[in-house]
Length: 410
Image (tube, rainbow, N blue to C red; front, side, top):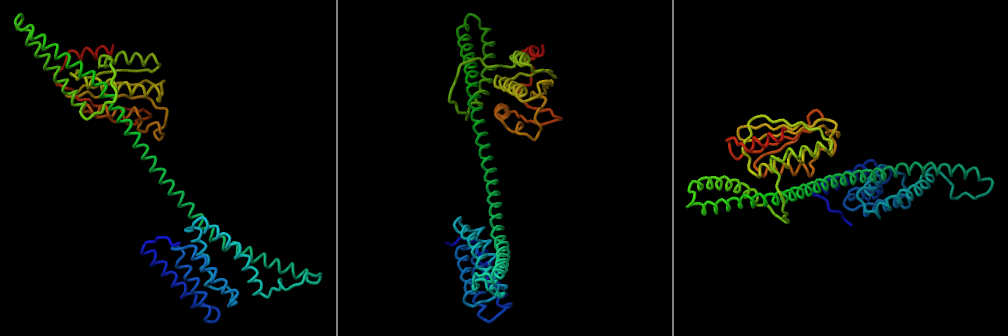
């Protein structure tokens, strides 16, 4: 019955009702009994937000007393009815809103006959004979005019409340929709990251298993060759040390990752980029690969990250980009890192959903982050540019990395 309002709303509505009563009583056009109607309509105006049905009922009581008890002409106090109808449509329940619409029609009919009677109308008392036909028509026209005027006046207040309520609900739905979309996007991003973490854990499993197998083989070989060839021990220990460092780095990448499935299979490395580029070229993608600087030694985890990032970026270019434009893949070897830049032509404009964070971009970002690097994307003159930095495991140059990069460029 009563809506919960804030304290300041209760105070404001009470002040409005009291002020309206004082104003209507001061400008009354009739005896002091007009104050009864003014009081009723002031109360209706004061409780319009707290209880729309009570407000509507009190307004009806005041209007009926005014017309059929005090026989008063419409006055200033009656303008409160407009506020009551507005509140009925805006704050009321579906039943109360329908009652408000019915009140508009009924009040227009009753008010039209009442106002006509105040103007001397005799429609009700006329007898339907030939001598009174002209008077009946004239009175009907007056009543229809008053009815149309009251429907327009009262209906406008009710319609205004309905329109404002609909607009407010539409705004709330829009806000709720945007919040839901953000929640869905966040959930999708979490799923993407989790899926990528699982795939990385599966990839790293084989890398670490290979590294530990090498360590075990070197250790066993050195133990058996200790007496026959003591000089082989130094080479074995060197291989064990190098392989163990790489394995330790890969194990650190595994910490905190959840694995739900593992599959056996060879892991791609930097030397496999050439085959990857050839496959994508055969699919219709025009690729230009350039390298600058002296290649550094990359661990197996870093090499896998480089391969997956290039693979995903070129796959996105093939699926979503302009395959008629050349894709530029550039490797820049700095003192302690590899900086990759992959630029491809765009079909979609920068404002479309094509450039939003998807599975591929989320996976590339996660790949780079888990090996201690970073990845960012940007739009540059209708070119979609992926820039990634992958740290090297050592500053010294490595012959194997140089050979791998040479094979890619050939």
